[in-house]
View (cartoon, one colour):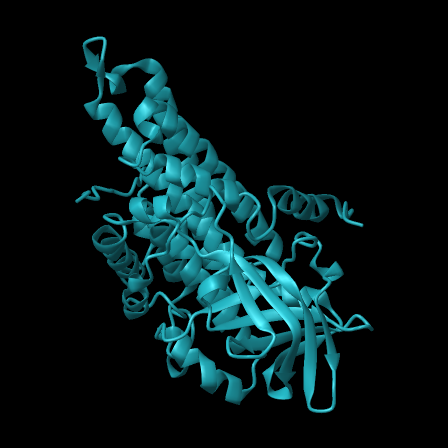
Length: 392
């Protein structure tokens, strides 16, 4: 069984910026990943299967809805604690963080933000315990970066809504019990609905032929003349920004998760450089290897400070979506660069399942476009800087 030897790089004593509670959440999450995820995840990724037996354990350590109030099954974690948990989950594998953050930031948070009391009582505690799994459907096959042009429609009838269309590239879709989905009517109102797996006209499909996010259950939500009771309406607005606002917490989770990947790849490369010998000495003694490691640690340290500061702003309630956007874009690019450098240090071993590098590297290829593409986040920051929108 593979032993997880990970130690967190902390060149600037950043741990001193965290509270005891925050460090406890991080360390408990880290130990859970070491014990439960690391030994099995390579095989799961190769098979293209999510380890569903881990769902119960994730719920027990607060992996679902940790930032929510106690009354709804949450742990009332602060945002830095939540971020540190996402860091550790994605260090284990993107599939673990994806399940947790979709359940928390997109599904539970949407119900908490927009739902009525009956909806909150019906779903939130069950979601927090992992008794039911949720997915979030906004993007479509033809409308990812431009969800306002979605083709999924709803028509209001006397006692129900009729929904037709589909959502594509949806995390948790194949295994979800409920789905938060967004549709548009003929006068450009946007509706958010809580869809139950048992509803007539609702089906899901799994995307099997993908090289990235191998252990994550990704798929399609399909609605064919689906009759949805009026009680399932979560939110209705003529402003797509309210639907997009749900993504902010998900992007925050990605920023922390990408940092976890970078830290893991650096730690593996550092250990390998201390073990591997060429030309009569350890490769860690060669100048070019040392430069790679120095560059990696420097970028990780910068990202740690950026992400910690964003967590502080989140806890203060003073963050902007542009700040979240910058952190997501920066950390994913940083993690991509570090994974590639780590792969070079490991040489041929870097593409084997003996080490996590290539799995993380191909997962990052999804993170580059996940929760908003790198280009879109670039333009969001560009608009903030210049005051001129490059969007139509």
